[in-house]
Image (cartoon, rainbow, N blue to C red; front, side, top):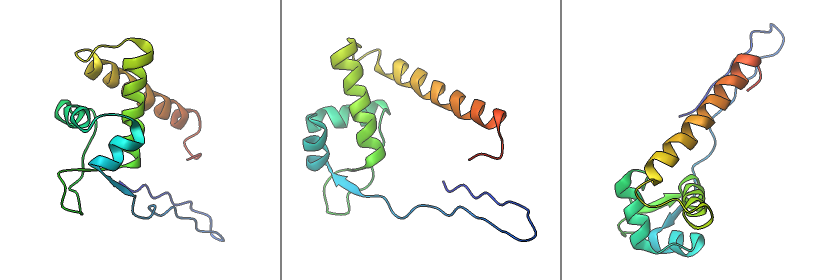
Length: 114
């Protein structure tokens, strides 16, 4: 979702436009890049931990860079912190809530910096 920010200065008008289209990676490419088996990627999709896009190459799913980053974070939780599969949805939800709170705090401290 693009965020547009306009500043009301009579001599300068600034607008932030949406970024160009994101790169998509096939299921096999995503599995290779993250070191996670494709079945585990499907499992994460079923849990709602990552979002898959329709695969433009005819496969079952494709993933953008944001999803790959999320997979890496999930795998860090599992491998390095010992978070079990059943606790992953809760841990990921808590992580995302914390990120949202940080954004809100930044905005509240300086609503014009974005």
